Length: 498
Image (cartoon, rainbow, N blue to C red):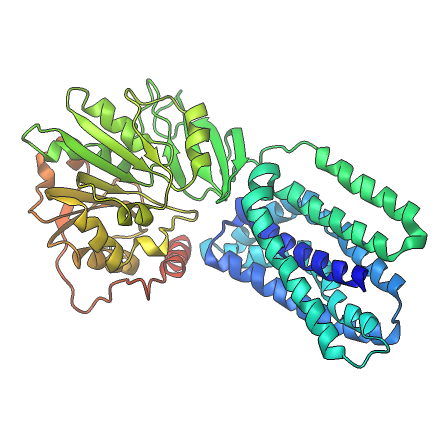
C-alpha cells in the first residue's frame, strides 16, 4: 500500500509542476495573461478528464501494476519533449498565428495549440493514474471509499507541493526547462518503483533524463530582433536585456528591458548619446510643473530598469529631488543594475507590489508616477480601480501631481475612457496627452488645476486636454476591472484596422 500512496503523492506533484511550468514555458512567446492561463488550466483539466476516463477502462481490463508503471514512465519520458521543443513549437506557432490574425487571436490560438501539442498527452497519461491506483489498492477490499479518499488526499497534498515548490524554489533557481526535467525524473523513478523487474532499463532512463539537467540554456531571442545580451527567469516572469539599433537615431543602439513575450518595452537604458524619448522624457519633466523650486519627493510605481528616475536626475541636476522606486520583482532591479548605466545619484528601490506599498506607508509625495505594467501592454487589474486611485490620492501632497502612463491605440479608445474616468473619480482635475507616434498616453491628475504648458519639456509635441466627468462611463473597481480582456480586444482591433 505504501508504494501506491507514494505514487499518488508524486504524480499529484508532477501534474502541478508540469502545469506551472507550462505557463512559464510559453510566456516568452505568448505572455502570461489571463487568456494564456485560461488555456493552460483548461487544457490540463481536459487532459486529466480524458485520462481519468481512459484510466478507469484500462484498469478494469488490465489491473496489473506493471501496466501502471509503464504508463507513468511513458508520461515521464514524454514530458521531456516540452523541456526541449517549446522554443521550436511555440515560436513557430506564434509566427503562424500572427500571419493570419493579430494580437488577441494570435495569443489565444497560439498558446492553446502550444500547450495542447506539448503537454496534453503526458498530462492525460498522468490522469490515468488515479483510477488505476484505486483499482489496484482497493482490490479485494470492501472499504473502497476509504482507500479512494486516502489516495486522493495524498494526491492533493502532492499537488500542493508541486504548486509551491516550482513557484518558490525551482523556477527562480533552476529555470523552467530544468523544472520540467525534475518532474520527468520523478515520474520515471516512481514508475521504476512499480516495475522491480525492469530496474536496469528504468535506471538508464533516469540517468539519461537527469543528465539533461546539465544541458546549458541559451537565451530566447526577442520576437522583434536585436541581440539578447542577458536573460533570466524570476518568480514573476522571463526577463531579457536586448540591444538593437535605435529606431530614432541612425548609427546608435539602445538597450532595453523586455518582459516575457516582449510586445511592450519596460525600460530603456539612459546612456551617453542615447537618451530615451517619448513618454519617458515627458514623465521625467514633471518637476517643472512646480515653479517654486522647492525640494520634491517623487514616488515611481513600477520602477522597472529605472529609466524615469535616471532621466529625472539628469534633467534637474541642481534641484533637490528625493526619489523612491517601487518594483515588485527584485530580479528586474538586479538584472538592470548589472547591464544599465547607473543614475547620477542612486535612489532606493523597494521590492513590493505598488498597492501593497501604498497601503503600508504614511509617506506623502509631491509627484507620484504610475508606470506599472505586466506583459502585453497590460496594467495589473488591482492598479486600475477606483480604490487604487483613491489610495494614490491619499499619498499625494495637497498640491501634488500624479502622472500615469496608459497604453491605448486610439484617442477614442473605450479602455482609455474607462481608465481616465476611473482616475477622475479620485481627482477633481485630470488631463490627458498623447505622445507622438506612440500608443502611450500620459494622464495627469491633481487636486489643483494643472497647466501642462508650463513645462516645455512635458508639453513638447504633446497636446493635453482636460478630462471632463462622464456619468455614463462605468469606472473600474476592485470588483470589476476586465483590463486584460479589454486591452487584448483593443490591440486586436488596432492590428486589424486598415
